[in-house]
Length: 96
Image (cartoon, rainbow, N blue to C red; front, side):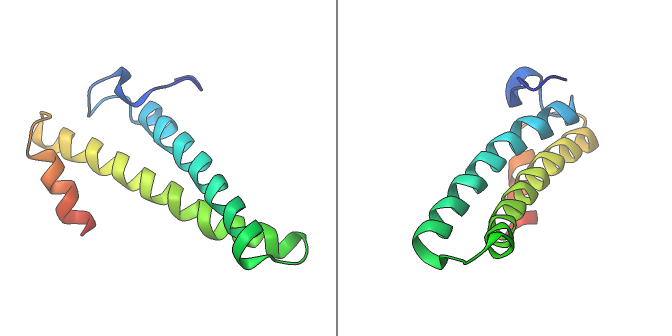
């Protein structure tokens, strides 16, 4: 596992830590970007702690969603023993 891990380097159901790193990297960047826009244009908190709180408020759920997606894919693929068209409806049903 390295910091340059990509989601599709290995098939679904293998290399959970590499896939977690890959998805959470994008979630972290998206969360920080979203938080920055929100802090500068919407909430405009005064002080360090309220600003940090707003960053945490948005970034942590982004990373939680990415982690849940990755681990459900990993678990469903390993439970079925294969990666096919039925894994993705399972994820959709769990997250809806």
